[in-house]
Amino acid sequence: MCGIFGYIGEKNPLQVCLRGLKQLEYRGYDSAGISGIFEGRLLTFKEASKVNYLEDKVIPKDLKMEIAIGHTRWATHGKPTLLNAHPHSDGKNSLALVHNGVIENYETLKEMLKNKGVTFNSDTDTEVIVQLISFFYKQDLKKAVFRALKLLKGSLAIAVIHKDTPDLIVAACRESPLCIGYNEEKTEALVSSDPNAFLGKSLQVLFLKNEEVACIRRKEVLVYDKNGKKIEKPIEKFDAEYEAPSKDGFEHFMLKEIFEQPLTIQKAILGRYSEDFGTAEFENLSFSSKDLAAVSNVLIIACGTSFLAGNIAAALLEEKARIPTHTEIASEFRYKNPIITKGTLIIAISQSGETADTIAAVREAKAKGAKVLGICNVKNSTLTRESDSCLFLKAGPEISVCSTKAFTSQIAVLSLFTLYMARLRHYSKEEGTTFIQDLKKIPQKLKQVLDKAPEMRQLAEKYSKYENFFFLGRRYMHFTCLEAALKLKEISYVNANGYPAGELKHGPIALLDENLPIAAFCANKQTYEKILTNLLEAKARGAPILAFAPVGSEELLAIADDIFWLPSTCDEFAVFPSTVAGQLFAYYIAKIRGTDIDQPRNLAKSVTVE
Ligand code: G6P
Image (cartoon, rainbow, N blue to C red; front, top):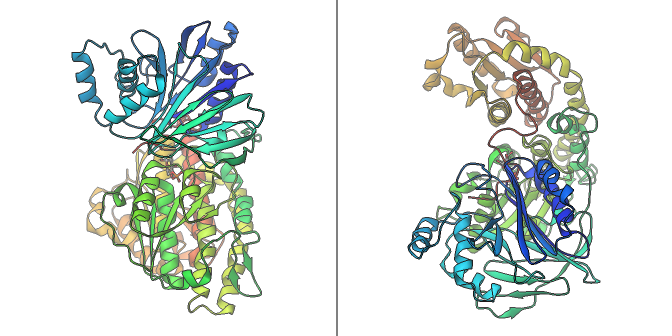
């Protein structure tokens, strides 16, 4: 999704910005642009495609700009065209601006400005901000930004430059992250929506809060509160780990990350359990065991794949720790008046830690006095800073837009958290030790699934001709099948609806015939006989059946058209091999259908707008 990067300093700002934008590419975007000041003129370069093309356009010009701001855009208002790409500038081409977020009252403001003679060139809400700042500008950029902010409604992170002040970037934020980094020698300053884009530099970093405005110069960074009063901000030392994204010989990031899972599960659990005590142990868990023993109910909030992991965690917490647990899609939760009591623990799950709806839901929960435990993969992300305590996935950067390894790591971490909560309650040491031993076997079992990737490819050949699927499962396999269906939709653009199998007869069965195959997730032993009956009902209506089942499920031989055999596990951990099988299925169908797996259409890795 949209990303901001700006630079002022001794290096070539244009080149530093291009490198910064490349760091932001993984978030998903459709166009990119850079503006800078060169010999007193404002120059802007844009491409309605990838940063590489922008680079090809800009680098040969060999411009040593004084300052530059760049942007990767994921279209919200207006198509992904050159005109709608950021940076946007005013009619006089004197100032340029990049923006993340959504301006809710842009139509009213646009009308107001048009009535005052301002001409607009794009369909974006962003152009309203730049025209407004230009309208208020009287030789003082900071003042003009403050005046504009007063009128703007919605979320924003902005960086603005003006040709009259080639040594200044003004930045501001509201409900959308923005941070500023500078080196100790004060020879360079950077601004970005994501500190991980700071290119492996060792910097002093400050994070802007709502309504704060910063004036960024090479030698100093001054921050003002919403009343224009200068404030001192806490500075963090930040060493941005720089790991150049690499596919390690795999054709796509998605495949690489699917194959990483035996290792990422190990990393997620390593050092986080004690077999002797049959319990989990977490570094940096800032809630005391007394706090957690007093938790009376859990509310899990998340979006997308993380939400589906949250549902599996909820089933675990209820079954193993006997704690009433609900899940809420973050975008819904934030507009409810949630019931939060003294004993409520909120768990917010987000791979990126930047999903706008999840962050807004966390803020809403905290405003009601709730304690928030974050489950996150990205250090220094907004979620990690705003939760009361955070457990990291340690899965390494997830580049593929389709989330794979983060999902299984979320479940691994939340399984251990469930164990911890269960041991604070009724779980015996022996039960805890068995739980750990079962979990420790998972990486090896995932290797067995991955070894069968060629077989999955053959199955995908057979099933890739269908345009619609039903994915069925029960208990732990219910949300596992929803995640597998989501993967297929995201990456192959095939319609896949997931259902708890028992629900089939209450409506969806009307659609069944020989053109609607069923992907059946049969690894839940507790409900195995029940799903067999559901599949017989589907078979009677001619639906082709592909079963994902643990070895030994012989009854399926007479029902399913095809079976992908999985290693056997206990019910609660069957999600791991079944998920990996679902990921491989989605991947190979997408590959056979020829979709762009590294850049699936319309999707963003990190959704930073509402
Ligand atoms: C986007 C991604 C999904 C992801 C969701 C939540 O929609 O494309 O793969 O599951 O955001 O992301 P988060 O970073 O909060 O887990």
